[in-house]
Length: 263
Image 1: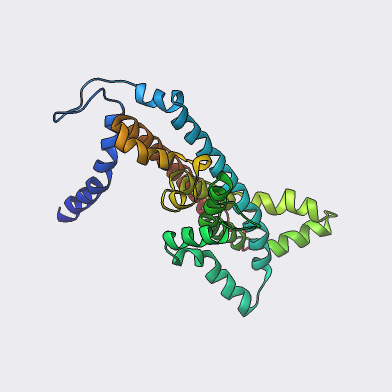
Image 2: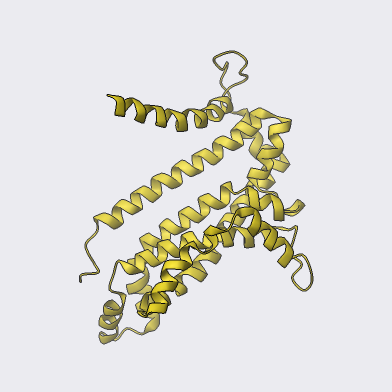
């Protein structure tokens, strides 16, 4: 009984605060114990107010760009490291996924500002700087999931079998390797997308007027209009929940699949 009460307390400690902005985002006002009225106008304000709508579009563009960049880097790197069966290769596989995670976000933001604030790479203060920052933050997560997907199958054996049937390198990649590692890639993409949509600390350091994302707009609306801020916060909560559900489903599919590595 005590364990159940403790579990319920922990769940309430996490869930109840997250429910507050969601409830407020559907309410006309909330001054007493319970909110009063029901409305969707605070969500409509996200799409009708130029600043919030522009921030939403910027967040989506940055998130998709970060996913694309991290995938273009992680997939070839995971493929190469998966084939590198040497002590150095194993060390790289163990350390690369956590290399950038050991540095505080404020350190990463400071490093990016110093690196891209002078010629010839003067990118500080625009949306390209935000894309670089989010890609750097999300790269370990994409790489770790992509590499883990490669490690669940005998990629060398599958490639050799496909080559013996006449498949060239491109055909092996498109029809054999990529479909087998796609669940891990999708999990990594969802994680990077969710992180990018909600990232605030590094973004606030590198974003200029053209790089205002939804979390930055949320911070401004907390001081201007708490109801719109609640709608933006709720949108970020919905994004995280949907990403969590999709990641859980894909992870279950990976765990429940056949042991391809033994094949």
